[in-house]
Image (cartoon, rainbow, N blue to C red):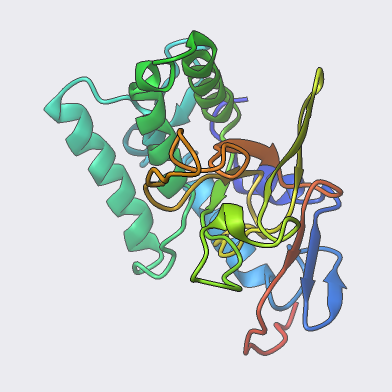
Length: 247
């Protein structure tokens, strides 16, 4: 696929995602007056990748497919690469006057950082470093918009997550041949209304305790990703103060 266009991005959001706000289900984030403006702002950023005047500044040839992909996915090999990526980020930030702090490049750069350090993820099992590398390639080649959710529901701050009610925070409840079964909730997921993928991970270092040799309950100290579509996730948004848009 390579670098997305704005139209491709907007069309990709028609995936039956479950977004709730003010007590009602949002059927189309590209048209709902509370979400449409931000969706259009993101589409404009993606369209900039295809502007002949900006193409070289915002994209680069994929090392695997040869297609143009977002420059925020580049794995820096030199100071020049870092400078080039910084300039790419600034072009997008200037386009929104710095008011879109969770534009897709934010997570693109983070997952690229993971890929650069893939060997660290495979310190105990090589398959995890392979997973990180393959996921990075998947995101880069499909120009996916990602978001993360880092915070567990804060019901009782006196207890670590593994001591909370069993059905509160997202955790592994079962593992099968098909994969993990997750149950529970996470909080704070900026950009989730427009993201293709949701990354779930701890928000901070999980310290060792006497009750757990590995630092925390292994069912809660996890890093994984999932498509944003329903029925995998239901998102409940805070009330926003905005007026209906003319479209």
